Amino acid sequence: MLSRSHRFHGYGSLRRTYSNGQTARGSLVSLRFASRPAGKPYRVAVVVSRKVHKSAVVRNRIRRRVYELVRQSESVPPATDLIFMVFSDQIASLETGRLNAIISELLDKANLQPKKTA
Image 1 (cartoon, rainbow, N blue to C red):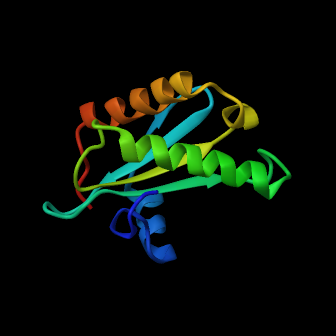
Image 2 (cartoon, one colour):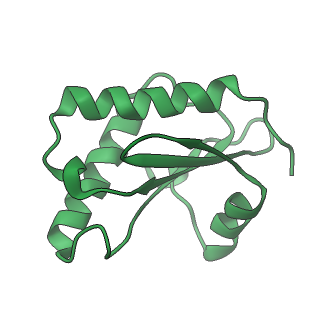
């Protein structure tokens, strides 16, 4: 489970990332990211709409899988806000290796792109 210091608190911080962040897109997931002041830990949110799947159980399973892969990843950029937006319910049944490759690819895109300061 991702520690409390790596989670968003309050709606305003998400709004800042949505308005000032950059986007890296994948086929099943999109990543919105924005830089934070140096020395601050990264923060992660996973957004799974009800349009993705009607069942809250499946939506929460998707959320937990993405959070766990981000927690285990070594390529998470420091001092960055990350919002993963899930487009497909295929992630709930996708094999872990394939999902890990998708998440790692998005995190690498976030590391390579120049950061906007807000």
